[in-house]
Image (cartoon, rainbow, N blue to C red; front, top):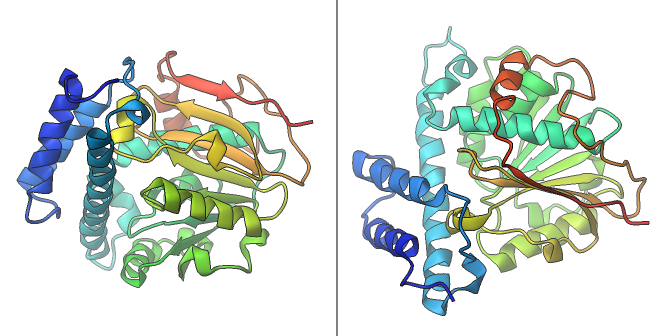
Length: 320
């Protein structure tokens, strides 16, 4: 059983000890350095360490570390969303998203999720819901701007201030200001309307522990339309010290289609599932292009075409 005697785990524990003693997790030189070291330590995927099979002390540390990472990520997004929203009135904040440290990761992740979605859907989604969009809804922005130019995105967040910041980001854009809608609500209180979406994204930061993550998934399963697609973020190998893991057993009422584990600097794994009860659309293995329509994503394709061949993807056949 892997525990504190593993060198990498020791490094993560040491970083956790330093991070947990910080007075604030808001962006600063010290905060940025420590979390940068943590991410670098957790990126390698060529390891036999199973975070679910560790001693209770390390499991408890991991649970606390995931919450600290989520809090720090929220502060980071809030910080840069505020900066971008404060630009002069004649400037479009969306033209300056590159100042966000992880913007290139979101470009890659958005392209990856679009590719996976295109393999398991026969039509262009007209409405997409993103649950837990936060103050900087980069997934919605990237998908709307580069991949789905005619789709409306409904962004749900429990924090009204986060939605205000997010709305300010797109308010000056003539296109996205019309296609990005923001709802301030706890998704667990939303019982009507979720069946209107072709695709529902559940953010990694919604449900930072197993119990709350499963509770959110169960609620979505209850209210999503049969046949609708659920996209989730998970984590693999050491990256599971940063984000919660979504297991197939967590997806009751859904047909699990694909789990994709990147091995580059995109930290999150991607899980795609379909709510049972609707028509099934077989995945098209090996497809990497835009099945829905031509899209404004040539630069993103160039980035993703350099993706290593060692990424791990699990395909699940349709349930008969």
